[in-house]
Length: 87
Image (cartoon, rainbow, N blue to C red; front, side, top):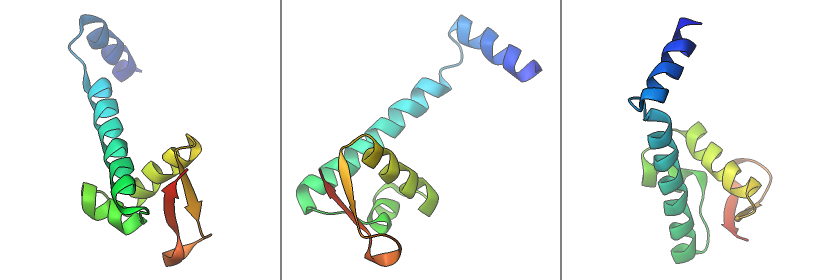
């Protein structure tokens, strides 16, 4: 509870800009994935991991969010055969 109160206090004072910074970084990373897709036609989870230096689960999360946003399309169901293309 104290953490929530402190977070609210600092955010009101403008001293806690971690969340907007994280959102900005996340948006830039997703844009990088979309640029890669425009240049290469398809992307795999491994490509995202290497390109962004993120874990498997983070790469999967970015790809799932882009798919949910209607920007990319998943091809294949599971495993190594899955790749994504622009919608």
